[in-house]
Length: 413
Image 1 (cartoon, rainbow, N blue to C red):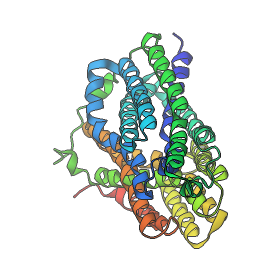
Image 2: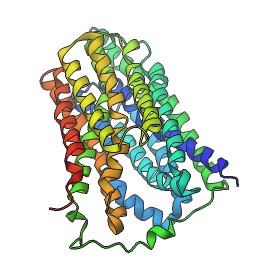
Image 3: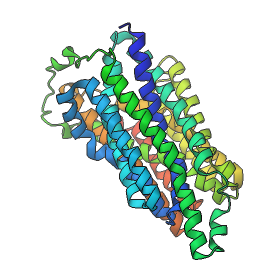
């Protein structure tokens, strides 16, 4: 099989990553209405999905040792399909717990899929062109993330403006029927999603994708460090894990909360549902800037500093303004966030030698920040307001800025 063919298939998988990952921005306001839950409770959508990365990262790596990359990717897609199927009984019974179970299953499958696909695209082909292949995958991911909220929102949030107010004036029977009709809207899209995921799993399983092994040169590394006998003796890594935890948290807040925030600021839900796509479009633009400018014009640590500073500026501006302008500053957080992930990774794993794989596993587990910080945002939104709750992003961006300026340089305890 020519190299281009496997890249096309893996590119399709990265498109799936982006599409499934960013559906929460639509599901959060949707389930808040359909299941009659609070803002805090609705952010368990993000919690259930992202906590799977923390819980399943190590089991996923063990599964891949048994299955190999190719079968592991196929298995991950099947697990994601099961998660999509769970949405059907969840919708029929308006069972929020079942929705969360389906999201956790999708996150678990995606953890396995990403754990396999990310190193696979690196190993698949010459080392000197790995960055180019990764960049192509990132663009596939970003485009899907931009499209996902708009597509699902057009289906499940159609004519949802003012539904909560209308329901309040209905009889008990009318209210149940209206909410059931709303809940049932996810059945068709998630049924289609399950079918597509199964077909992709079969495509991977029976395709001619080479079942490559991990880089033998990497396995042969015997680098040792003076007085370094444990992963816990690398403070720049541990600080990097904490920083990545903060970053994923604010990234998910920026995307998953913006629909509800736009509605809070008085925009109709028919328009508010598109702001998540605007946030992801800004992130995609930032990603393209990174591909073009790093390291030719911008060093990684400087990109991280400027990104964190931009996050502080946009977050502060959102708190000091209101209406569409405030929502727009939240959308601009996508631009600020774009270069943080690719900048933290190389700084955090620099100089780990034989501890590199373990360090990478810890960084994957830090994706759990996407579970915790949005939940805290939802709690603050209930206690105060959806506007003032964005104050949570400021200390997070400050922590990222401190890591960019000082934290990544700390190599000894």
